[in-house]
Image (tube, rainbow, N blue to C red; front, side):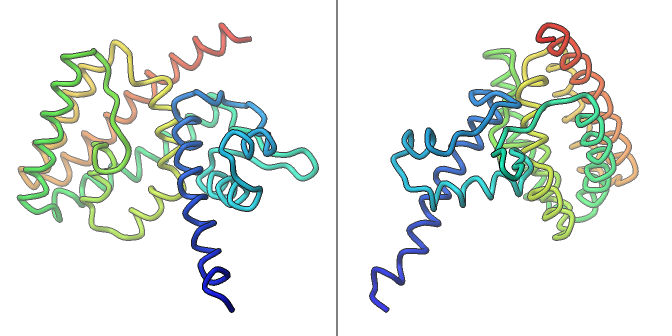
Length: 229
């Protein structure tokens, strides 16, 4: 086999990575609207790529639940529904409550110091534009708590199955609202409980925080659906 043939799967995978990331962000931010049809020919033309890496990128988006594929029909961005939202947030209450409890036991002093530094950045952002946009990964408070649990199964479950769907709802309905200042204070309270190594309190505060966020996003989603119906 030639070097070109050996490198081809790696090249396709790298292209798929880039396309997947771009589409992921576009879906989460609403640039590609919820429920909209995915046109493979249009996307292939837009990105200047062949169908191979595009289909790999779409498979990854399907795996993280941002698109749905139907045989003989094609792919669509997931539709945002109240029922879907409630299901996701109920799971979050359990998973992230547990993560906060474990983080109080497992996070190092350095981890907690870095979490404080992250919240300081978020505070400045809120003062500047009154929104609470958190970039994915380590710039995301909730992702940082999940990582702080040091539980590989919990991290994997959250990162692969739920994370981008959670970001989709948070970005489109929770990032700019009257609840932003309160949500930030709740983040500070959770970190204080983790710093005190009080796992029971950290779990209670995180569960309550996500429950409050759910009610806020439900209200905003209901208002959005009422306008679009």
